[in-house]
Amino acid sequence: MQLAIAEAKRARDRGDYPIGAVITRLTGRREVVIASAGNRVKTSGSSIKHVELETLKYVSSGYGRYLPDFVLYSTHEPCAMCAGACVWSGIGAVVYGVSLKSIRKYNLFWKWNKPMGLDVSPIVTRGFEL
Ligand SMILES: [Zn+2]
Image 1 (cartoon, protein in one colour):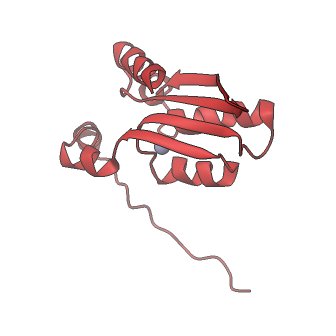
Image 2 (cartoon, rainbow, N blue to C red; image 1 turned 45 degrees about the vertical axis):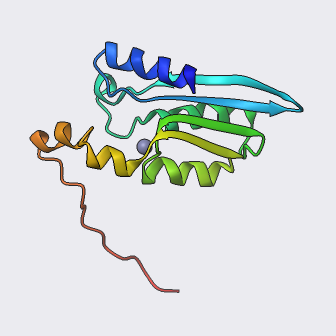
């Protein structure tokens, strides 16, 4: 988690949201860092470039489709998109710092989104029935 916090500080220093993530691999009694990164939503210009998703994609590309021997550490509770990626990657464990409840309570990110007029309720249309 210390490394994830350091990545969050680096992200903040370059103007991104202060969120960091680390993925480690457990091999026997050893835990080895495989990937670490900070959030790049602002500097990449992509609203879906969340650090949890990006680190999962990186590790999946090198270590296989499912990651049962890996642990994701994130400074913040993963959002619905990243939580889904955690489930689909089969990662062994997720450890996070700040909860989504606290993020909302203290208005940590929402105050940045509202001035942009971000609508987080897209129209969803159903497909077909089987
Ligand atoms: Zn996310």
